[in-house]
Amino acid sequence: MRSLESSVPHRLGRRTNFIPALEGKPAKWADVIESVSDAQKRASLAKSVVSTTLVRDPDGRPIVTTADVDVMAQLTPDQLFAVRRPASHKGMRNYISRVTVPSQAHDSRAVWCESFNELSHLRDLLITMQPTQVSTQPLRLEWVFASGVRSHVPDFLLRVDGGKTMLVDVTTRSKLDDPRLRSILQLTRATAETIGWEYEVRTELPPQRVRNLNFVHAGRRDVRQDRSSAARLLRQARRPIDVERASQLLGGGSLGYLRLWDLIAHGLAHIPLDEPIDIDSRVSSDRPAGGGSWLVNL
Image (cartoon, one colour):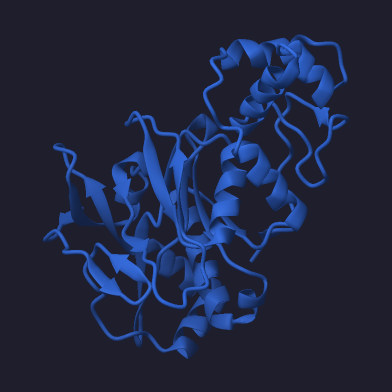
């Protein structure tokens, strides 16, 4: 890992960047697409990748560093600051936001989302994957081609159960029609696999799921309950149980519902997220199986 001069934040259109600009001329897209389509060349590019990161030094201050594959394999989301931040601007169409996320190194942490699509997916991951660490815009991946360089900033880096690390990109179905983006995402997947990370490309969530995620996420509040004991109570209840029955087990009335939404929002209880929520919705202690129409296999 090589330390660089700490970058002065600079505004470039819709984003504020905290790392130096990429050096070198951009690689020709024809070269990128051809190289990535060849499995051997793609693997070679993945092994030779370099990233620019903004990491926390021993005093807690951000420093700009570069890292190869071996060093990246040791990085954790809690070590990383965002390498860029969305900025509001006149005529903007994106919905930018900050989200409180889990952390093992800090009492609390908030990260930026660059769009409503990203926000919805982060909420989905917080509920369904229960990550212990989260960083957004965590690093800039840089690859050298014969005709120049290309880079990519993934959207999320998460540490999940079992110590696994997951890199995530969020986009839209229509953008995947662009062979340039598909090539970059395919190369990002190969790079993540070389590092030892899992990788997901996510597109738009179904509208009903987004509505449910927004509703459930609003239930992340301190309702003065022992979440572990409450989750255990639901697990021990006679099956099956629905929303109404679960709320009664948790104290009944409005407080029982608040406690239930709090458990669901923290991933300690689960309900179907792809259909309307009502008092008859089934409550489960089992994490939902992976997969969904929004996951793309490139």
